[in-house]
Image (cartoon, rainbow, N blue to C red; front, side, top):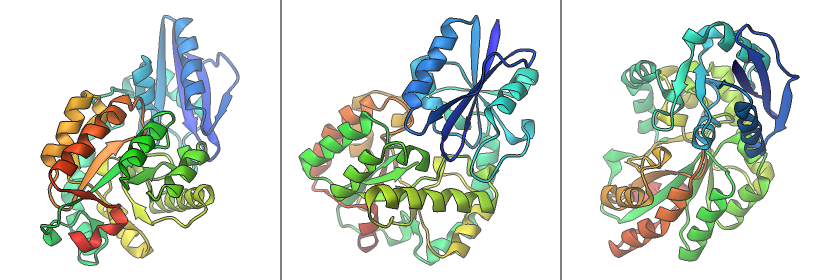
Length: 348
């Protein structure tokens, strides 16, 4: 028998609902508070062992779980807004509706893999946004509110290491251990729903002198968010980071996947508070290419003023933690020094 497991998210955590191919519920909805991704994954693995096929279904505003699910051996699909009812400003479609929509319209689901990530199948939307947003981003760039700024590149051998999608124990702590050992500052772009689940890790980042950036509340594909939904996600994440760290956030915003339409960045400009941070060195560590490949990407691609993209969240990040010492030592040997993203302006 095939079972469909809908996984919804809210301001408090995650909900799990399951139904048959006919859309009949097989159990009461289960709630997993923020910080219990591991417990949710374990529950899905238990359900998978009892079924011929278990299809785990998330939706496009949820980019927090597919990496961990795939790494654990679960089968993950994504449902998009066209297949779903309307959702609240700070939540997905409820888990039961998500499971039923998937069960009754399985042809509208998109398989999600580790390599393809949760953007699988949405590449045309992403590419269209990239083509049409240049004017809006250009205006932000002129105002000094986009990094990296290639027009201001210099020769000062500084580099900023950044880590996305956490906190995510135990990998966040392993990465923090390495950074402590080398006395290297970094910038962590945190997902709000993870930040409220792992407040000790957020506090440790701040206490160690690292910069805390905003990576939205649920790691959505921004193409699918209204202005109001984006505003709620960013503001709620800032509040969560400030509460956990005890200090005000940096107001640095990294769009998930580097996504966003022209409307997204017009809203950012109107907000007059956030600075957008992209990257110029992509390690592709999310695809788990191996620690040597990750370290080599950092060392070979870094240029003066580079911003390096790595991940402490989104799944198993053992390779990133393992690669970090070699990456740091390789850059030190080449005369680089490390700064936080909020310290980059004077060096680009």
